[in-house]
Image (tube, rainbow, N blue to C red; front, side, top):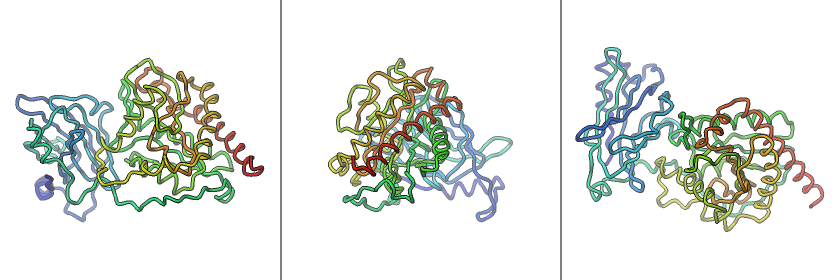
Length: 405
């Protein structure tokens, strides 16, 4: 159930006087998006600088409408998509992977797109993509839902070697490799604050600040898993750390929870069982990121199926060692939640050969934390605190390499 509207988009572009294929074109900018509830349908409108090709398909579990578009520059208002109307509870948008963008509309009930069309830019008005969404029988929705024949939701990936040799500390020309993973990105915005702050934005800035701080040390090589506003699957985040032969993997997040009073930083290391209700809530939301953002996991042997069983005890021990060095640094800088070293089955921590931690820098559901997370000064000082913990960990691991204990 997906059909390209390419011919129509080309036709309206020509009517509007757009350049022919092959001619130089400015980057398409998405400038606004809105939902409207009408008597017989819910209308979604995306405003753009010019008409583009697109296609629409439906996914179940959870029920979503996915609109696939060429890669474009997303300049929507900060709170776009955070609220719903009619049959749509909200929507996410952004770059899904190079050359491709997606809008994912979350449905309150089974629904179908009754009408969809593109209006070209004219008379000072932007080009508009319009979807009219109507209720549908659940059985009809399930029958229509599914991936397009040419799309699996993610690019093909080579298998992971199950037999992994540990990397010695001096395996990178004497440098200690640190992979920094800014959570979420692209079509997956992550959590949001009351003022419209998006997790994907603040953690990318925090990752860049941490990279800059660590690169003032000669002993470190720093790799950013995500260096722009792009979507990366949880599996590919793990792959990136392992491909870099990282000695340490740090995943940065700034989530939201239902209790707005929860504030402060915390550090998570891998466990099959969540340590408490907050950890369990975060684990569910983070591990669902691929699903809600429109990634097909069917028939995909996820890395998690081999990782916990194969995870080396030494890798887990080293993760906990770094966490214990990190907590006092974060406490002095930003404060900690109760029981700040927590445990959860985050997929992004499941590399069997790379010590890994997930840092919750704070909670966008808390006003104080949201204000801190948007402060460049606070991000810089927090980066310095994390870097001091990395220094301590590097010294300890260097000593272990030299003495054997």
